[in-house]
Structures are given as structure tokens and as C-alpha cells.
Length: 317
Image (cartoon, rainbow, N blue to C red; front, top):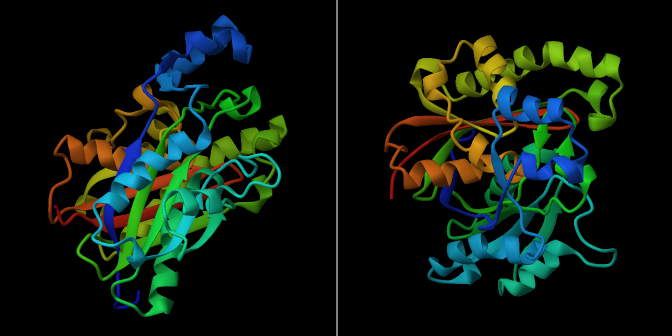
């Protein structure tokens, strides 16, 4: 670990007001009654945010604007990273990162997308932003990481037997040695044998299901160890919102208590692509559950399969 630490200076999230239930999605997604029971009873899903009247940029811009409105000068933002899990999220010829840069008044910033780690891309973008800022050498420079995308087709909305995809966006202002929450470690591991993702055959999918909890637990343990901590030092695990069942299996494999794993947003929002951990951070902060001086573990998995974990210490406002 280098002496300089990436810091999470500000985080904001935004979701459409319109909610739909799992049962509302049964017909459009072709879910029979047994699949509905699977998602609601075993996977713990209840409802999610989805609004076809809200386009991609109407979804993503509000959280980013809240971050920028709190800055004394937008000129400090030298990099804009748009992290999204679905590779093609706009019509051909439109670069969403460049549209965001223009709409946010960041014409001076370098803007690009990060997509390669799918739903684990949000944390990857934070790590990349930190490395860019370190190489830049300007202590006042900042990077804005933005996440969010639309569940615009049935193929995107449904991960069979695993997740239903909701809509939410988030933004994170990243600094190096800034006043925000210092990132103590970041660990990622990709299992290339399962790169076909949702197109894995039954045999490979069953194989992945067997090793998933232990491999994910290994990545989280390493992140905690790299931060110089133990699991007892982690106040809360802040996970992605894929489903309850996979998290019950994973925290059992890790030996981490359920009461210190934040799963409250799974029935409220379901899985929101790369935005989950940042969305959950903002919910916990609003509820007063992030305590200055305590350590937190964010964790997510991208279909493909990429495991990612990040440890930070909360400094408070």
C-alpha cells in the first residue's frame, strides 16, 4: 500500500420514484408462479425502482449534480468516469460519458467509461480514479465517478433465478489524501472460466454455484487483511443487492454475522447494476449508521465472474 490514500469525499444517489413489485414483472418477464415464489421467498426481493419515462441521463445526472453543487469550483474535477455494467447503454454514435461531461459543465475534464467488471465496475472506477489522481500529482484535483443505467429490455432486467435489475444511479467524488473516507484496501479477482456469465451452461453454472461463496469470502477476507484489520474490526459489510440467498451463503462461508451485513435495501431496490454499494452507503449515512472512526467493507460481484471488495474508514461530515 502506498502512503497516499484514496479518499471518498462525497457520495450521492438517486432512484426513480416509481416502484414495481416482483409480481408486476411476472408477465413481461415470463415468470411463472414458481419463479415468482423463488424471487420473493428465497431471494428476498419485493420491489424495485423502474420508470420507462425517465431516460438514462435523467436517471444519472441528479446524483452527479448534487456532488458538484457542493464543490467551490468544478475546475477541480479533472476526471469523469462513468461506470456501467451493461456495455451498450446508448444508441450507436452516442458516447454517454461525453454527454455527461457536457451536461455537467465539465468540458475541461477527461471523460471515459469503465465497464469491464460488470456490476463490480463501480469500485473498479474508484480505484482507477485514485490511480489517475496519484499520477496527476495535484492535491486539489478530484475525480467524479458516476454509475447508473436503465433496465431497458427483458434480457437486461432478468438474471435467471438470481436477480431482477432495478434502476438507480450514484456519484462519488474521489480525492487522494482528501478529507473524506480513506480507502484502506481494494481487492478484485476474476474467474475467467465463467466469463460467459448468464450464458453459462447448466453444468458450468452449477459448478460456479458451488465455489461462489468460498471464492467471494476469500476476496473479502483478503481486502480486510490488506487493510491491516480483522473481520472483528469491520462494523458493517455493505454488499451489492443481488439477493438474500447468495449473501446468506457467502457470509456463512466467511464466518461473518448476519446482523452486521446490510441487506435492508435488497427488498427495497433489488440489484441496481454497478450502483448498489454506493446507494447502500447513502442509505446508511442517512440513517446515521456510519460511525466516524469505524471500518466498513463494500463488496460486489460482476457477472463474468469478478469479485471485488473495498475497505474504508468513515470520517464523518
